[in-house]
Image (cartoon, rainbow, N blue to C red; front, side, top):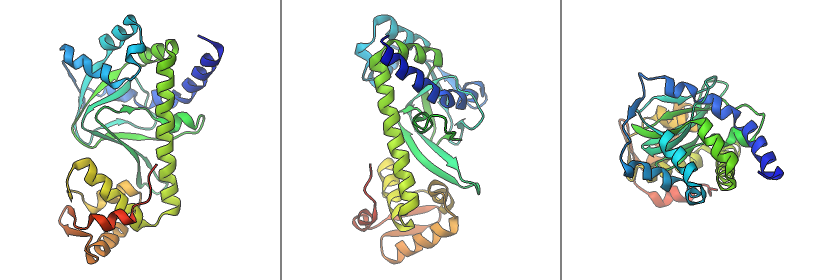
Length: 265
């Protein structure tokens, strides 16, 4: 490996030490996570389609990933990682949805980003910020299945392959950009704009305008009080943008919500 790439790898793995520490409990919590059989060739093909650098790996590197990867089932609400736990693998989401969030000083949850099928659970914010500590929690929003690639395998591939290292750095930069965008919204955007953006994002993820969400759940995503969300949703309803019922928010005027939504990254 050339010195420049070696130095990049050294710095990146220092950055990612928090990532490896934060998910160890995931595989050891056997009462919450069930190992699935993944012997079929088409199952392994999913991993090849996930990594754009796959064709640039050697045959032995490809075999290492497919032979060591484990498919696991995660029930909705289960915590995959949290502060103080160690990591034992890179997570590739096969189906379902995951949410990464932090807790504010007063104990409120603030959603940093979500992961959908085909995405990799890479705590890029902690990696890019280097020595800064982020007590991230990742939980399953839906029943999910994830591929787990052991850290020694991923470390070996990243050290040996410049293409793999470059891909990881791109993911880090993308996730960091998303987190910085969120910080900007929290600092400078009004709650009506943030709420409109959340409702539209949720609608796009669920492919429906009828969202089954409580006010408390929305507040947890936005890092605010339930009363604030309730007051703003009632205002949206009075303006004809949504219709409220118990445990449900129905979007009735998408165009006006779109006008409120801040520009994304």
